[in-house]
Every structure is written in structure tokens, then in C-alpha cells.
Length: 458
Image 1 (cartoon, one colour):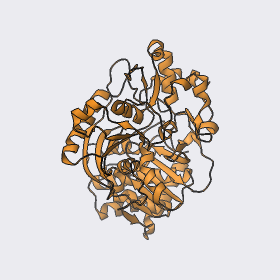
Image 2 (cartoon, rainbow, N blue to C red):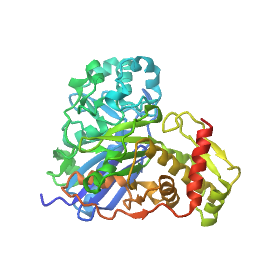
Image 3 (tube, one colour):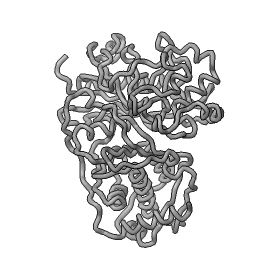
Image 4 (cartoon, helix red, strand yellow):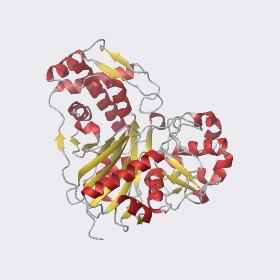
């Protein structure tokens, strides 16, 4: 094959699935296809529609390759998702949706065997947000099917297996609040050995490893060169972080926005992480621990703005700041920095749509600033993903942290990082507009008032 330049990035998010074509010469997306990604709510439990996703992936690869030759394929997906396959690579159980509450039925038994936070950097989370809890529940609830499993795979590597026939695992997904990985020893946690899962775990490979070329039948179906390499792949928030690890001078932070808003601090202030507030230790694509915090900000934004206008003007902002119209946490319960506080509006009754949108944007920014504080963030903050395009969000984030905020220009923040796995490139182009902390004291005063109100309600 000729020199690798155009990378097809398969990006499976919780809300949407995308295939982006990234030009490594400019580090920009030159084409993008997307589909909604909703779980199948059928027996035996809510699960991901992997066959619909597979058809979308193959169709997208074929269409994009007709427009521009694809030189390599990279993969990134949301976390908290694992796959059990048999000797032939077929599913032994459907891929469980982490928002399913089934694992909570066995919470007492699981809590008795899971490793402590000090070992894994994994907080105890509800539903299936701890992947170890998913596997535990599946083994207890479906012992016959589980016994047929020949390999446990993280979600990006499941798609790599389907593309290449090669089974692997990778540390960014293994280290994403799973209870399965010890980031300090770079090895599986005590849980894996306690449950007898080590022999099931596919070999751990670096994210940038080329697992192999695509399978011959897939080359024929898509029109791709039969030697098109497929990279091992990585967790989506860590894909957003990777370009900055390769090019930015620490200290800095990256906020990856999508269904989840994940804040990651590099070389920040040393702090004691609080697992009760959804802080955790991620593992980056270079294999190093990264203090992180998160909340379900994209889901909250969708719930709060559903069916309403998202237009605003300066007078809306002025009114919200003057009246201290504010939304207090949390819309989504059970996760985030305020997991058990009930959302409430202050002076938010029947406010005009523009003012409501401004207050929602400020709420999301202040939740993000709280996450950054909890992980000892320092230096500039780069916002990746949809929230980077929300000027109210970036302005309030800069005001509340007192540090510059850079709004990434990439339409899909994860795709650039995933594409970089195929390259030795270290410079990142087109980083985006920098928002310095605003001179207007009203924004900082609003942030102080919000924090005081949150503290007052306990």
C-alpha cells in the first residue's frame, strides 16, 4: 500500500455511531456518516444492536472509500461495555447496555468481591457502569451461556475482531471504571483472578498496534484494498486526550463531551480523588494513569432542551446573570459530582427560551468546572466535541476556572485522536479559538453564587 493518509475512524458513541474519514496531512475530518444508536429493549436484557451497527459500518466504509481511498481503519467506542465471544468469534450473550439495572440485583455479592478504589481507581457505580459488575451478573444469571465464552473483549476490540479475525484487548478501555485493571501495576486486578477470568481475557495490545488487514470477504464487500490495516483502537475519551498528550505542554486538561462529559487532568495539582463524587483513574493511550471526573452532561443537555429553541442573545445572558437564574444539580441521578442531589431551578419559573438556554449552558459549564476542581486541573482546558461549539459554555467555563479554555474545531473530538494511532505525527493543527477568562465580573459572580447555592443544599 501507499503511504497512509486517510483513516476511516469507526466511532461508536452511546447516542450516535459515526464513521469519519480523517486526513492525517491536515488532521481534519473530510467526510462523516452517522446513525442513531439506541439499545434493543428485548429479552434477555437491553442490549446493543450490533448487527445494525455492523451493517452501518460496512456500508459507510464502502461509501467513503468510493469518495476517497481509505488507507487504514481505527476504532473508538464508549466505555463500560464488554463482549463475550465463543471460539468462532460469535456472541455467547448479547452486548449488555450499561444503563440496564440488572447488575444492581447482585450488588451485595459483587461488592463483596470487587477490589478497593485504591487498587483500581474505579469508583462503585450504579447499573452496569462498572464492567466487572456486568460480567459478574452475566455469569451468575446465564451460567450455561457464559461457560461457552472463549474470550472477553472490550468494545473497540470486538469491532476489530469482526474486521480482522484477531482477538485483543487494550488498556484505555480496560482502565475505564471497569474494576478489571490496576493502573499502578499495568495488569489485571485481583477481581479478574478471583473470578477465574484471566484466561478468558484476550491478549492486551497497544492501541496503535495493527491487528491485521481486513478479512478478505470484507474487502470484497466494501471495495477496500485487501491489505487495509486495522488498528487495535481505544476508548473514546482517551481518543480525545491523545492529540494533546502528543503535542501540548503540561499542565493542561481536556474535556471530552458527548453523552458523557469526561474531564481529564494532565500534570495538574496532586489531589485525593473522591470516588463518591464520580472521580476515577483513567488509563491513557500511552498506558499512564490520568485523574478524571465525569457527569452525564450530554444526556442532561438533551433532556433539558428537548423540543425547545436554542437561540439566545446578549440581553438573555444579561438577564440571567442579573437575576441569578440558575439550575442546580443534578438532572441525572447516581453519577457525577453531585450524584444524589435533586435538580432545582432558582428564579427559573416561566423564563423565556433564550434565558433558559443560557442558564442550562451555564449549569453544564459549572458542573464541568466542579469536575475539573475535583481532579486538580491546572493550565488551559481544551473542550472537545459538541460543547466546544457552545459559546456560553466555554465563556462560563473560563470564568469559573479562571483559566483559558480552547474550543476544539474538530466536529468529532474523538476521531482525530483515533486517527493519530496510524501516524507518528505529533503536531496538532487547527486547535480552535481560545477563550480567556472574561473581564466581565458578572460571570465570575454568577459562578460564586451557583457554588454557594449548591453548598447550601448539601
